[in-house]
View 1 (cartoon, helix red, strand yellow):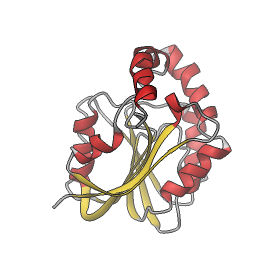
View 2: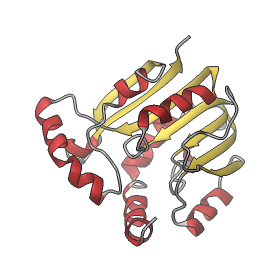
View 3: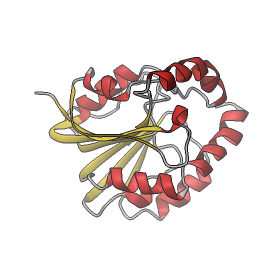
View 4: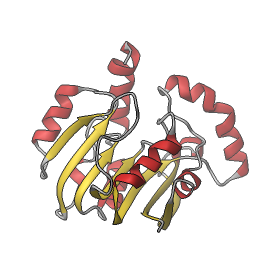
Length: 207
C-alpha cells in the first residue's frame, strides 16, 4: 500500500464505516452468520462486534494490512476466536473446498479487481448447505443515477483506492454460481444515491 492508501484513506474509511447507521446495517446483515465463518475483505475489523453467538469461529482474510495496532485491539476484544490470514497475489483462497458454513463480505466486492473469480472462489470454499452473506454498495436501479455512477466511477477508483460505484452486485453473485435467496435493495440513510445504494442479502450455492 502507498502512503495515501495506508495512512489517509484507510483512516477515513475506518471512521466513515463505523458510524451508527452503518453499524446497524452490519448487525442486521451478520445476524444470519453461523458456525465456521470466513470473512473476506476484513479491512479494519469493523464487523467483529456484530457477529452473533451462533458463530463458533471466524477466519478473516485480506490482501492488505491496514491500521494494524487498531485491528489487533479489535481482534483481542472479539467474542469469537479469530484467525487472520493474508491473501497472496494469486487471488485463490488458501482453503479446501467446502470448508465454511458461512462466507461474509461487507463493502468488499466494490474493490476486488477480478470480482467474478473472487465470488467463484467463495462458492468453492462454502459448504453445500452454507450461506454467503453480503452487504455491499453498488449500481443503482435508477437509470439516471446509474449513468451518473458510470460517469463518476473513474474518479472514484482513484480517490477511493479501487472502489467502484457501479457494480451490479446481484448479477455478479448470480453469475458466479449462487442463487440469491434473500435480497434487499435500499438507500443508506443520509447518503446520496450515487454512493449509498445498498444490497443486503443471503445466497446459496446452486446445485
